[in-house]
Length: 149
Image (cartoon, rainbow, N blue to C red; front, side):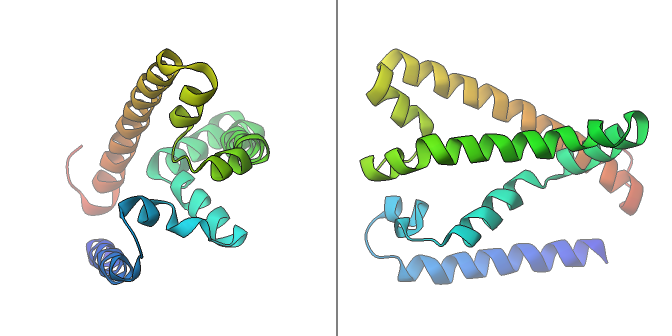
């Protein structure tokens, strides 16, 4: 049942992506930023969807179970605070400049070396996040699909 749900979800996302890709005017950059015209609730839902992954879900559940509510709530509260601060201080200037990523902003503001450093730091931190998601996904597969971890 779970595999069917995941399969249907993946097929739906691919189908919607292909349909929307045909309607995008311009190049792939315009597609990546959705024409810079998304409404705030849609952007907020997209950012929240990125944060609700197996790593955060299982990790927060375990932290709340072993150390109490505030231990489990620290990640979502911290993430929400970071998104709010980034939105207040970086979103508008980056949108006006037509930038796509924070390293682009850092290059303009501080130079090429800071852009490269921040890019490498973000790649490294994403690899750690991905590793956590793979571990949590392995536990989920073991628990629900009886696949050995």
